[in-house]
View 1: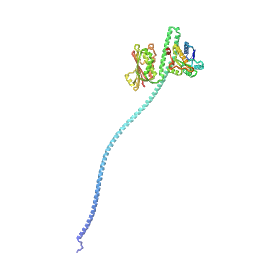
View 2: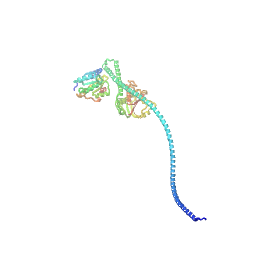
View 3: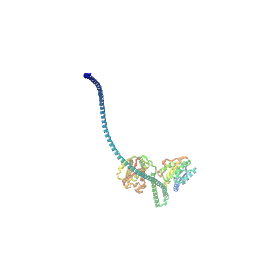
View 4: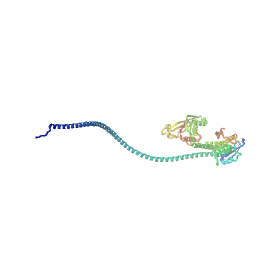
Length: 387
Length: 161
């Protein structure tokens, strides 16, 4: 006998089922919770996903940017590399340039040292030259003083000789033989000649010693003054003096008057007796360049400098005559002191006139040149600086 | 002023020139009283001493020992008692600057000593004529200088008379 209150398998099963239903409901509740959790988590996941998408977009953008930067950087680096290469080239060139400069500095220092030596030499030579110039000035002064004093002191005894001769000739006329009278007369002539020489020598020395005051003067005025001084001779010789051009010149008036007087009186004196004397005077301003061009190359004309200063202006004065002229090879000699081309019996004078003219031209820092042809005439060309 | 006899004083150190002068005066149709001194000091002593009868005219050489012609001229023209006396410069040489100096110093005439004796005589006669006229037209206290262009007497001047 087994009597167990056995439960009804159905009730068991119902219990079990009820339990399982409870369980199932538990499970369902849990599932519902889990489901809610899952939905929530899905929502979260989707939020996260959306955020991730945004983040990824952001990341992709930044990756793009980074790639742009990287590309730019590559370009920049290439540029930098290029510039570095250039800089190195420049540096290399600079090294070469510096070497060159150092070399040239050395050369320059050598030249500077040579220049210092040359300058010392030059300074020394200038000193010597200045000493020589000072000595020359003193010597010239002494010479002029000597010329002046001796001419001056010689006048007095000479005058006595002349006066006594005239007294003798006057008072002893009857006591002298013809020969005696003649001898005294020759003595007189010689003494007068000496007087002339001394006067001329004095005049010559005075030209250099008197003060030089330069004035801007119209040459026509001086020419007129000289013409008036020589009026008598001009009329006597029936001479014509033509002035073709005139200009102003910076001159010492009284010296220049003497110069023109000497030249014109010479032209009158040395006129051709068969031809009416015609004297042509002209003065004009010329440029140094024109003068240099007018002198044929290689030809040195006596009295002319090798070259006129091209920047300077010169006053060119010309006195031409149609008289007896002179042989060309005398063109320099005629300017010598007491130099004559004829004896004093033929043409009077001591031969000082042109020496005085030349001295006056030199006082004006100029040059004079004489050209002549026998029996055709003579021409005197003077060039003095215009300012 | 009445001049009957011309009282002439010559200051010149040269014996020959004094002789020429004396002989020239003797040949002149003028009555003259002539005295010569031979240096500048002698001249000034004489002039300062004889204040009553000063010479009518002084012929003055320039180069004299002790005191030269320039100095004497200056002293004479600064002296109240002497400055009315005409001074004729009688010199061997001629120089423009010197002549100007002498004219400004108050000299009456300038003569360069001629070398021909005949001219010597003529020029002295000429200047004495001029001096006589100057003295007659002048004043007791001073003498009137001629114009500058008439200051230098030359042989040419005489020949054109």
